[in-house]
Image (cartoon, rainbow, N blue to C red; front, side, top):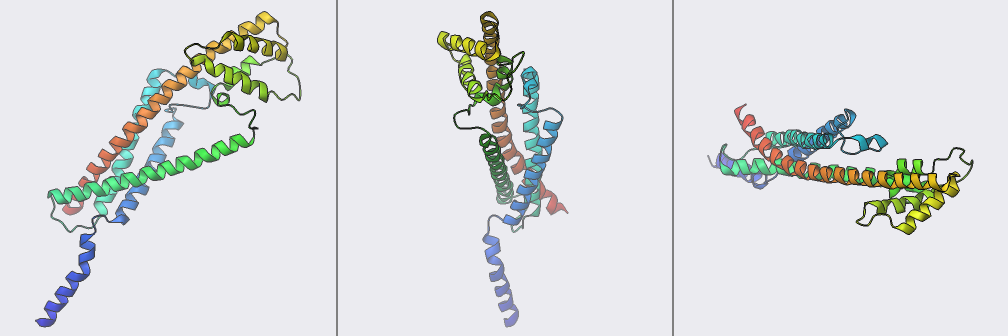
Amino acid sequence: MTIEAGTLVEDEALTLPDDKAYLHWTPVVAGAFAAAAFSFILVMFGVTIGLGVSSTSPTWRDASGALSLLSGIYLILQAIVSFGIGGYIAGHLRRRYDVAGTPEAETRDGFHGLAAWALAVLLGAALTAVIGAATVHGSSSALTAKDTTSAEPLLSYELDRLFRAPRPATNVDMGAERAEAGRILMTSSSHNGVNGDDRTYLIQSVAATTGLSAGDAERRVDQAIAASRTAIAHSRRSTIILAFSIAAATLLGAVSAWAAAASGDRIARWQ
């Protein structure tokens, strides 16, 4: 009896550190990777079928507000599904030292799901930062610091139309002219819009570059200013919808992970 009691005490002492561990990181990491993988797949599927809030194509300007709203709703739904799967895995796989149905058990389940959610968000943010840095580095390497402008990706179509010539000159670098015109057109969304001096300068630059008459160059500049104002407003609206959708998707994803983790624990206990 003495040996059995000693063995029992020794076994309890060996299991005590695991019992005190509030979070078990193996199910948390597994749930986080599963959530990140499902989120990536669903986002890529949404982009493939056209549910993208923004696009590099000039035709994104033709997208309606309803499509932007639908894209935001899809982003929220995929987050609920993805983080729900990750939370379920984290709650289903964790070790159990507590009594089912107690507040302590539900709290532990929820925190496992929440930890998986947080790790998945960090993984997604890190991946996005790496891809964004690579994209910026690749695009900036082709441009000099003098010719780089933030207007080029947004207003590239307007700049193409602005400097389109019937007989374009060969081997002529238009980078500096496009960059300067882009910076001027970006002011079209301001309260005062493009001032008179900048407008006159654009007309002279377009006339000298394309060979158009003063009247034709003036009409082209006015059209470019109006189109740029519309494009910037559309981009601003899409950015607001995207930012709100990401914030709502992230917060609802945390709720989904918490609830799914608790459900995963209950199902595991029934089995």
